[in-house]
Amino acid sequence: MTPRRNLAKVAIQKIKGSATTKEKDLVAVEEPLEIRLAGETAGKKFDRSLAVTMRTPGDDYELAAGFLFTEGVLRAPEDLREITYCVGAHKLEQQYNVVRVRLRPGTAFDAERLQRNFYTSSSCGVCGKASLESIRTSGAERLPDNGFTVAPAVIHKLSEELRKRQSVFEKTGGIHAAALFDAAGALLAQREDVGRHNAVDKVIGEMFLAQKLPLNRHILFVSGRTSFEIMQKAVMASIPVVASVGAPSSLAVELAREFNQTLLGFVRDGRFNVYAGESRISGE
Picture 1 (cartoon, rainbow, N blue to C red):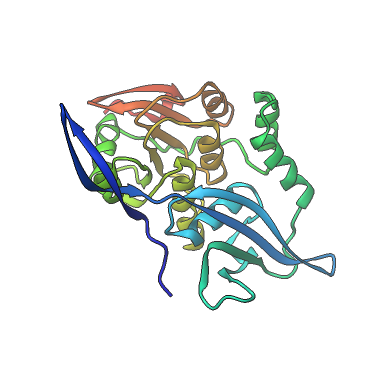
Picture 2: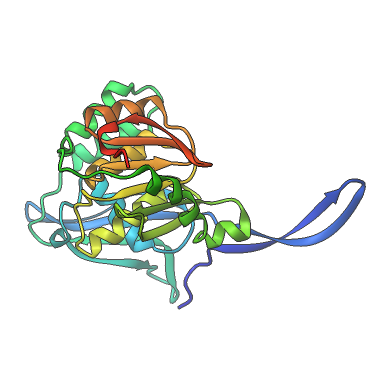
């Protein structure tokens, strides 16, 4: 069984000035991943498709675990019985684009609430107030002030530390990344994906499966901008500081302020903006 590739070689025409040449170029692979949930509730077995996300293959189990944890389906590693790739009924090869997450018997599962959350996150007409309400009802809590602080000097070096480890970005220039750091700026986990929210799920999923949650003394750093979804995932994992190379959205700022998170943007070239939670940035 050969895992799916995260890079693909394509034929291109390269034009420089008036000259045209035929070459090969590497691009990041983008494929669908279906996440299925199986288990037993009220004496009845179920096996249902929950979501399909476009992702870069690799770390699919971590992606599924992180997604289900940040959506409030999985509360603890003990809820999880196993994660497997699905095998087609009439196919011998492994189907690497479908994973089944099987819950342990007795694990509570509110299918109706989950459907409402997916509706809220996918519907064009749902307002910011409804989106924030979905976070409140998912079990997320306002982060406490536990004395965790980060020095500006640490923040300044996060982008460079992540950039040095972006192997797929180095070859393609077209993929996002998320990384988890400690207060001293030591990198603990890093993942790449065509979707920045998928990269975050992969990082959180890795920590979830390793039983290293909550991450209440850590920094999440992401490439690109910071969206509401990324802040929501960080809240669920109790991550107090979220930083990004780009700008945050208005709803990301609102969520950070409501849940007592520190939100930093434009972290590059020796500068950054603090949009929420300035008390966690030390004066050193």
